[in-house]
Each structure stands twice: as C-alpha cells, then as structure tokens.
Length: 289
Figure 1: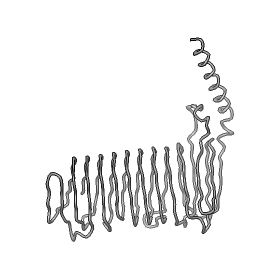
Figure 2: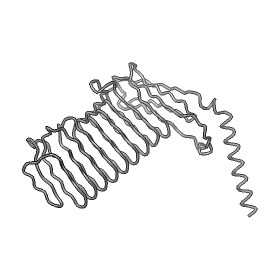
Figure 3: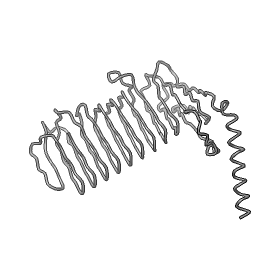
Figure 4: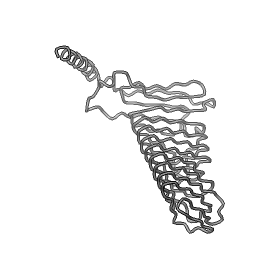
C-alpha cells in the first residue's frame, strides 16, 4: 500500500512539474510560427499531414507556400525538390498538458492559386477547409487524395482530374466538385457531396454517403456492405441500372423502361440508357431519386 502511495505521489509530482512549466511558458510557446517553401515547376506534390488543429488552405496570388500556425506544436515545412510537405508534430509530453483554457489552434496554409498538380491531405482529427474561388472559377488540380481519420472536412469549388477519398470516421462536406475519376471509400463516417460532375466509384463499409449529381456524364458503381447511400440524379439523366441485393434495399423514383425487379435485383433503363449504374448491396440501403 505504501509503495502504491509513493508511486502516485511521484506521478503527481511529475505532472505538476511538467504542466506548470509549460503553462508558465504558454504565451512564448504559442507564438505564431510561419514557414515558407518555394513552389516551382519541379513541385509535383503538396502533402499536408495535420491532426487536432483547425486548418485552412488558402489559394492566392503568390509563387510560394507559406504556413502560419499559432499553436505550441512544431510546424514543419519540408521541401524535397519535387514535394513540399506541411505537418504539425506533437511533442511526446503533450499528454501532460490538460489545461482547459488552451486557445484554439489554427493553421493557415497559403498556396499559389495557379498550382495545378497534385495534393495529398491526411487529416487525423480536427477541421480542414479548402476552397477554390467559385463554382465557375474552381481551383484546378491533377490529383487530390484525401484521407480522414476522425475529423471534419469541407471542400468546395474544385476541378480535379483524379479524386480519391477515404473516410475512416468523420464528417465530410463537398460542394461543387468536377472530376474525371472519382473514388470514394467510407468505412464509418458521413460523406455529403453537392453539385458533383464525373464518374463515381464508391465502397461503403459502414457509414452514410449522399451525392447530388449536376450532370450525369459517366458510369456509377456503388458497393454497400452496411450503410446508407442517397444518389440524387438530374431528371434528364440517361442511365441503365443494374442492382443486386443480398440483404437490404434499392429504391428508385425514376420511371424505368425495360424494368425487371425481384426481391434481390433491379434492372431498368431511363432515357437513352447511355451510362451504366451498377449497384451491389450486401446489407444496407440505396435510394435513387
């Protein structure tokens, strides 16, 4: 019993020493940090790896990348020639700092608005916002890869050749996205997309996916293991639907010609039937309207 008491006193003492030391130096540790890196014709990738911060990516007239952060963690901007990486690195003793009055940590990343190559975003937790100028003047990228662990992501006004999205557990809102190829993988989370144009390849393990399509211009393939999908198509969409159901439901408000529906399948055509919509539901629901 005495040994346990001594151990508790030692742990408490260590906590007080660390915590008080960091709190006394709080304002110094929380000074705004900014770091820059040149964006050249050799820069093929901007990689962003952040967690537990509120991040905003801001395109503007400039020829370099600048990251500005007001938290105490280490801000790192590394330029390896063809890649610029921005990351926030937590220190090993951060778990000692439980201060309830900690100020909101914000990271702002300024990039050239004419940067049109590749970008990778890895959001462990926290919030991230990234937007082009407007729906009519979107930011154009060759490839955008997004990986969300547990956080909130807002994307808007983007035109991407290749878009790849992986949501483990979080909330994602996308408004106005054009893609030549679009892959969406939702393990457990919520993904809502409005004003989307492009092909769709989606795999839903356990979560919710809602997509509103402005114009159907390519094929759609959706595989649902256990989750809910809502697909909002334009009234003049031309598609041929092929759906298979093991234990779940596929419903459509579109009038279908050549319709063939049973307990475990649904086939039919709307309009010219130009673009295939392939649906596979193991256990879940897909609603098309």
